Amino acid sequence: MASFKTPALKNPSLSLSSKPRLPSAFSISFRDNLRFSRSSSRPQRRFLIVTASAASISSKPTVLVAEKLGEAGLTLLKEFANVDCSYSLSPEELCTKISLCDALIVRSGTKVSREVFESAGGRLKVVGRAGVGIDNVDLAAATEHGCLVVNAPTANTVAAAEHGIALLAAMARNVAQADASMKAGKWQRNKYVGVSLVGKTLAVLGFGKVGSEVARRAKGLGMHVIAHDPYASADRARAIGVELVNFEEAISTADFISLHMPLTAATNKMLNDETFAKMKKGVRIVNVARGGVIDEEALVRALDAGIVAQAALDVFTEEPPKQDSKLVQHERVTVTPHLGASTIEAQEGVAIEIAEAVVGALKGELAATAVNAPMVPAEVLTELKPYVELAEKLGRLAVQLVAGITGVKNVKVSYASCRAPDDLDTRLLRAMITKGLIEPISSVYVNLVNADYTAKQRGLRITEERIVIDGSSECPLESIQVQIANVESKFASAISESGEIKVEGQVKDGIPHLTKVGSFEVDVSLEGSIILCRQVDQPGLIGKVGSILGQENVNVSFMSVGRIAPRKQAVMAIGVDDQPSKGSLQRIGEVPAIEEFVFLKL
Ligand SMILES: NC(=O)c1ccc[n+]([C@@H]2O[C@H](COP(=O)([O-])OP(=O)(O)OC[C@H]3O[C@@H](n4cnc5c(N)ncnc54)[C@H](O)[C@@H]3O)[C@@H](O)[C@H]2O)c1
Ligand SMILES: O=C(O)[C@H](O)COP(=O)(O)O
Image (cartoon, rainbow, N blue to C red; front, top):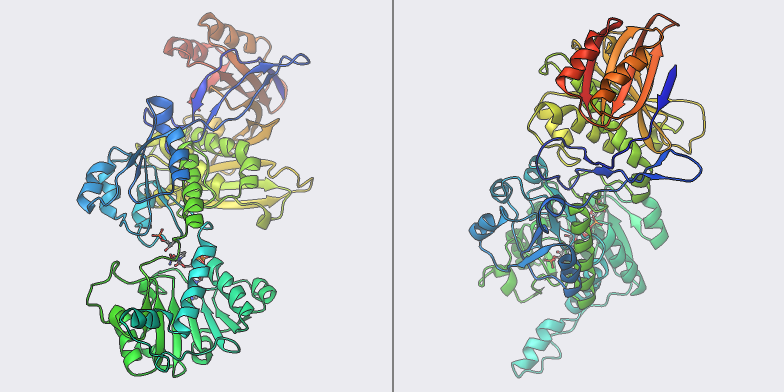
């Protein structure tokens, strides 16, 4: 294989989206910073993730903060965006405002419904939930609209756990009731005899971040702690000294139950008439998770029947609950108005955590706290960055090789890697291949959030194959191959022996290269655009094509010829910085030795 390369002369800022629209949170762009080092004339290339949508095109992006956020978070946001703090918006007002916003930040008090995403008109790129629970955000609608949802999953964990323990102790010792009684002028020492915590069994339902912190603290109070969580790690439980048990055992043996699971379809009304009936008579329940995990009417019945001795609740199905709520007014129920996360420290932490996540997402960085997109750890992201670019460009090339654009249905992606399949997370790569495949042939904007959804909608079936090869596992991938089955190609040489359009690429020195087209090996860096020619290999041809391009001042960045045998058929891949005119392309096609050619935009 013959190949020569010339350094690119320009310094273009390439957006991977060819569409004249604002890049979204996941529109990763790469900016070339060409520097010629003393030792080599080879351009040094640095990859940047280009700054945000609106920011890179017009002024700053706009972030709507719809609920009170800590000052430190607001300061961070203001450094990057126009910040509109509009608290207490009605649903209608939110829908009206949202079309002018690139990001929205809420706590648990704002419903981010499907109507909100529909009203956004495509501008809303990220919803930041300043807290953990995302049950107030319509995730399906967000995903369909390609809107990233990020949360702040860690900053309020301790606050919630401390509040859980506070409620547990306050309930056991009737603190709230005794306080109200004294303030009413009474001194009722016999009425408010409590129960002890030490030696009692506490069942933690939902052994995640908050649940395990509650467990740790309850152990410190001398309680016997068991936990139920179908997804919890046994190692973590063992480390804290907690026994993981099934749901039935947890609820039937506990003296105290503390709830710490998210509100989902599966956990909705998890505590109901049936489950209360299985509990130990006199059980005491703490809920700092979500009101909806308890059937509140059933809880009132269980309290009245004496099954549940007491409850301490921070969260309610409807917030705020109705003033005459039987549950809130119940004498043996202690209530707080969703205060779990409300400490000065937690609110400061949450505000910073969410502001960083939102700004990062607006900058086009992949968010570590994404709720509706694969979470790719930072170190994996850094490692995969050049492969992300390679993946999108291969998808973009492959689809442009298809003759007619409607038939693309079956795409196979093969990843050749020295790493074990479990050691290579390909979700990000698959999303970028999908982006590359779909964007050139549609008006749909694809990002990591909606890639799988969009592929499914369009009936595009992407299968993935891992090929484990020998070598050092230091580099995550040797090559990526994209094949499109059951289609014809406008460049017949792109069809492999097995009948599919096939393109393959590798990352070399951090730069994505096209290394195979059909059965032909080439080597051209994936920058600018590419001309593929099939010709009969002969002297002088490279010069002829080069001079046609040179006459038009089109800079050739890379050129490579892959051939079957000397002076037999060959495929020449030419990387060009600028798009040649139709006339130049026609003249290339008229060179007698050239049998077919295609111009492909990256
Ligand atoms: N009251 C507050 O102000 C406040 C503050 C923080 C968190 N929260 C709520 O507390 C809950 C837990 O938060 P977290 O940060 O610990 O979340 P987390 O994701 O770390 O933990 C949730 C755990 O629940 C488990 N779970 C899921 N389904 C379950 C089921 N059917 N049965 C048992 N366990 C199940 C999960 O496996 C996970 O381990 C959330 O609902 C969150 O919204 C409330
Ligand atoms: O899920 C959470 O993080 C808590 O419920 C806190 O909600 P808040 O931000 O509305 O206090």
